[in-house]
Length: 140
Figure 1 (tube, rainbow, N blue to C red):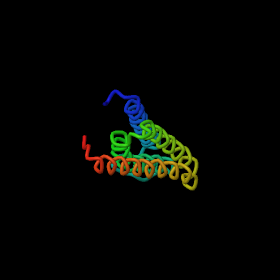
Figure 2 (cartoon, one colour):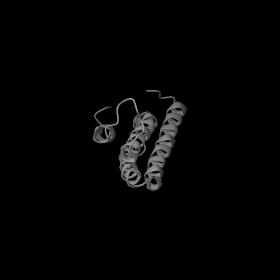
Figure 3 (cartoon, rainbow, N blue to C red):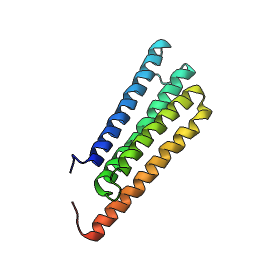
Figure 4 (spheres, rainbow, N blue to C red):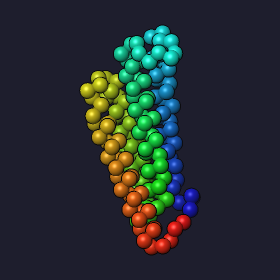
């Protein structure tokens, strides 16, 4: 089951999402150092504050994204590739969000909408797949 193309696609989306987190952690750390902001301070230079906010918002979204991605991957079998594709859409949303927010906090909306779309779509696929499995009586 875990070697299907659909699960491999979702696994690659998971790795990309984790990579995005690593990059965002690094960005916040570099800006903390560049602007000499000592831990545990979370305020200081506006670019550092934006980087920290991007990092934290992405962590907050990751907590929602990851279980939805894998529930949809496991249970939504009609178009098995759809959850993985939505995983990449989520990653794209986080990248758009990060670039937009770093340029100006007002420019974060497009990335937020892309991320929200991917999360809601994964929620729908996971719910549909779970209900279909339950109704069919074929619990994994």
